[in-house]
Length: 118
Length: 155
Image (cartoon, rainbow over all chains, first blue to last red; front, side, top):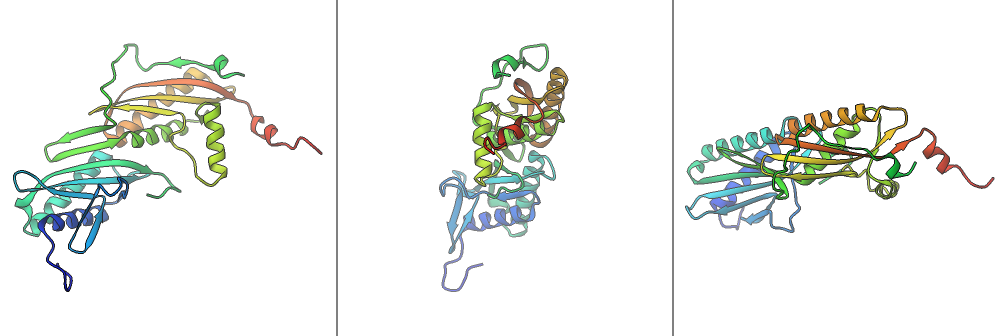
């Protein structure tokens, strides 16, 4: 949804938002702001950290998630990756973006133990 | 006891297994996409797992532990990767650990328990297969070691 005075967000940004919401809803993971700004998507008046959404050669939007897992993780990291993929795909389909969604890569860059913060 | 006197190197399994090519992170491919586990993540899991075994006093060599202690006192928190080195491939991980064991404990028994715990935790949490866990016991901890160092030298 576009804010007042701003152009409507591109599908790339909409997909990035969906991915960010999936991260927020998934227990035990948090988006990592590391990467010197490489792992973020900007547009529609906002910057989404930890999500890199980019259009591929076939016109679909590939998504790359950069995450920190919290200790102890509630499930194995590959299971958490699958949960995220499922959530993103279902939300994209509900939002009419299912056909536009490409590959979803999940990278766990860090593990946050008690006392640490991302 | 000096570090060299107390060193004991053991290797998982009877067979020498080759490590997968390190690429800075383990990647688990599924039909829906790829999940990559960073080496730092595997390092922390292995370090936490090793510390869970009773009889393991600390991880790392003397200099590393001294630096870790200073960092902790400076409020920088505990270094979970201290004494741990990992190499990860697409589906496998190899782990090297440097341990300080409590005096009086059986080194072979502790080493085996650490190996089992590291394999269980790393495989269970990351989904990577652990091909080897190499352990160097580089020191023994005697009760009172730490306290005696902290006693004042003057009255």
